[in-house]
Length: 268
Image (tube, rainbow, N blue to C red; front, side):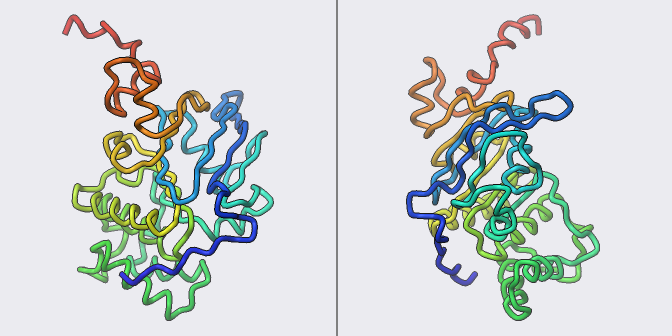
């Protein structure tokens, strides 16, 4: 894969400007507080883990970061630009891998990547070249006529990530990117994301695979019921945790209320 272009900082984004800045965010659906006073700051060039149990508000937060859902109150700045005022400019700078990987099943991988590249304004020649490079990197070039509808779940995740990389974005929003991906494919995806962070991009990742988060992420925020209940490096979270909580999984279970299961399985 050819070298990615140098990342350019926008006029609204200085070297110390956070990649993401969320303050007192609220989102209510039919009386349910999906996001309830959420505040979080993600530095530039950071691999940031955004963790929580099912229904904690992770996907809703990502939708608001993309401008696909509007908050009821609170503020969001992405790459130094406020939402929703600059939603179109922000989307141009984001690479997204959604949890459901909605793709066009009747296109080949190359056709899909060409389409996405053209949406982001790449020339026809650049789109073809970039698509070819990414299909090779993600090991999706062995059967070029194969339709996406015939891809395995892991292959679909890989082509979704290739599409997220096509325009060399400054921010990646990753919602369970490793789900259904085999060990080789997951290792490849992790290495590519780490290289993007090394080059100055920011990765905002949700995942239930906590050992992966522990190995990859510089900082982690744990949310529950729409609020951040802990944030920091793994070492900082470990220092704050109760005795015996040595892994991220231990810390996570302790914080989100794993103690409620204590003693329930003694009869087994």
